[in-house]
Amino acid sequence: MTLQWTFIAVFMYCEIGLISLLLLPFISASRWQRIFRSGLINKLAGYSNIYFNVFIAILLLLFLDAIREVRKYAGPTSEVDLKHNPESEVVAHMRLFRAQRNLYIAGFALFLWFVIRRLVTLISSQAQMVAQAEASQKQAKSASEAAKKLMEEKENLSNLARADDTDVDAVKREKDLAQELMDVKDELNNARAALKKKEVDFDALKKQSEGTNKEYDRLLKEMDKLQSASDGDKKSN
Image (tube, rainbow, N blue to C red; front, side):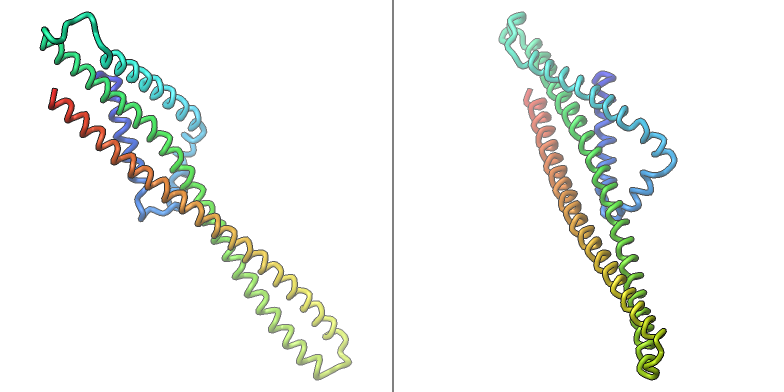
């Protein structure tokens, strides 16, 4: 295997390892978000689009070159009579096998590069939605406590107002508290509605992430089948 194909193979194995880490269930999205926001990652993130496009260009060129090699060695040849030259036939089949192997390596490396980009985006979005949901829950809890406190104060003022009907200030204060209570209730309802919306978005993102995981597992199985078929062809030849 030449140097560039060795590099692509190592790169593909690193991609598989990184995807396996991203799919570990005991590492939460919030923890991954803290890792993504670390100092070193933030420095590299400024050039992430450049790195992404450069690697896509490299992998795409190697993938197209692998396709060219497969078509070159898969087609009929007129230079050598393969039937009367067994050694040349073995060499031709060996070159075809290597071209097919390089095609699989470049293709899967290119595909996994897109998968990694998508997984990182989904994990970041999930972490942001979890943080927003927690903030909405805290806001709803604070609004509930404020509403409970105002209701108790209103009840106390109502008792004072019944004891002294001429106390105009107490009545006015009671009205003000009633208005504040209505405002707090409106704020509580808005917070609950926002929290419900975040939960719905979070469920949709979770289902999308599960679909991506299933597609990744299916592609890994196809890759194993292709590698098994390639090994079988090599042994038979």
